[in-house]
Image (cartoon, rainbow, N blue to C red):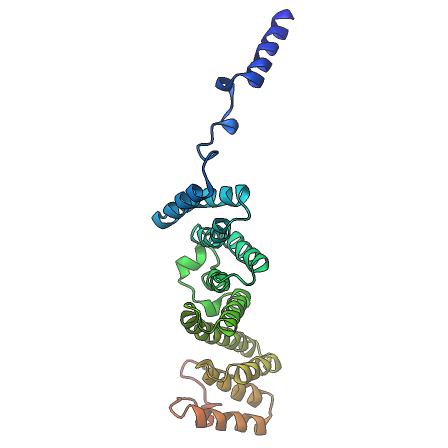
Length: 265
């Protein structure tokens, strides 16, 4: 019994007083005496070299130790980018939002909006999306809408931003992707004989995405839906719009009721 007490006492003394007995959790931190400039420089070097985890570590320490300096503000922006490159969109978006809230008049706040758009623009559905090479129109449109809104706010508030031109290109892509998504849903309803739902989706595309190529397919869905619902006037109006705006389309009312070669009955 005395031996057990002695051993416990020695171990306790060791854990409390001897650095040689410390665990990995208490190991020496080489950055503890670094200045803000040193932490920022090391973080930046690792960010440029692609060691995003180490860059994140240094940026976080810089923010924690020197929260009010100019280096900390720039570190917040670059930390968001490091999270994004490290495939951590949740923290990337949270960091960008925090920067916008804390520094709404910062000269580089336009980049925070651009980063928000970029993160959602490149957000995927995990491993399966890479295997299937899935495009954005086949995904949940929530990320596309949030990406569009971030880019839109950037180009509206900062039309002269260095990121405005690229944001406009991405916005056009997103509009077409969201329109294609709506058409895919409309076609799904059409196949399920849910003609009212199909027509409503198609009308939404024609009304809200007038410059998108997806309008052509939306009009075809409208013609088929209205025909199935025995609404000849609406069907013919949609067909005229289709012919007027897409004269080269292969669709025609004459073929509306004709069976394909593989349809026996």
